[in-house]
Amino acid sequence: MALRPRPDSKRSWQPGHAPALLAIPLGLIVAVCVVDVLSPPHIHLGPLLVAAPAITVAFAGARVTALMGALAVAAQVLIGVLRGALPTANIQVQIAALIVVSTICVTICVVRDRREQQLHRVRSVAEAAQSVLLQPLPTHTGPLRIAGLYIPAEEEADLGGDLYAAARTADHSTRLLIGDVRGNGLAAINNAALLLGAFRAAAHRQATLPRLAVHLDAAFRWDTSQWRPQTEQDTNEDFATATLLDIPDHDPVVHLITCGHPPPLLLRGSRLIPLTAEASHLPIGFGGVFGITAYEVQTFPFEVGDLLLLYTDGVIEARNADGLFYPFAERAPEWTKDDPDELLRHLQDDLLAHVQGHLDDDAAAVAIRRLAL
Image 1 (tube, rainbow, N blue to C red):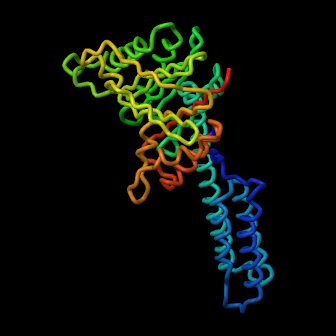
Image 2 (image 1 turned 180 degrees about the vertical axis):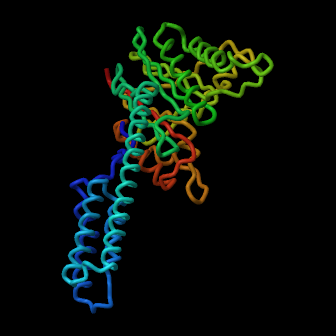
């Protein structure tokens, strides 16, 4: 699902809004011309024309700015002709100054537009990387309807340390992963890509859920420490909290393994049931360090009509200006009758309103509703 529309990378004249803005410099040029011509000879308002191209830079591109500069110069020439002062040094200096300032404004526009084009290309690459790393979840799989939401903490970022993925198995079940990699920046993105790759490579196989958890822990631990000196491998602090789920098509249950991650929430009618596992294992990346070779699977009822919510701590730990956490468990039951897509739209709007549009951490959520076969 789309998180928010991206602004156009160019500020050049666009028919939707530029005419209203262009009225400002155009009105300034007309006003200066009229007042200057009607004023006494010792009053000169021509220098104010320099504001026209300077204002245009703020919302238009190089061509429109150059046009506004040319109009300002023409207006100054017209003032000189009407007042019979065109040959004077004063008018000629004003015209020269307008030409210089207009040229500078156009140059600024050209440089700015080139940088914005470069930024647009970088964003395009980032969006492509996001589509590869954090692939959209399937809207339907077996009897399940699924939707995913990802909100980066940094406004210009597309991907951080939060992640989710789904895989279909041959024995008619759906496996899901939601996780949160420690840290931020490129290191977190790299580790998120590693964990997603390991899940996609193994989740569709017939291995049990505990064996999948062991595989993810081993793959994550090996890749994040293989190039470290032997003396530093035991102090490697790369890890990820995660929840692994397996949802069979023909059995109204959900099997899950929790590795230091917030518990899923089950919405059944107006009731909210946290699926708190009796044994929460260490985060992915720590299992091998402490010799964990087996993971306990918890099983909970997941019936037709039930809605399952997976989320990262960026959702429940989001604070408002008063330092209050986002009341996710209180708000979620209000949307229990919505489709997964609609529920996550409500969540996104409500969460961003709570933090006034500024998240301190990435946030991700997955909504799953079981339908009748």
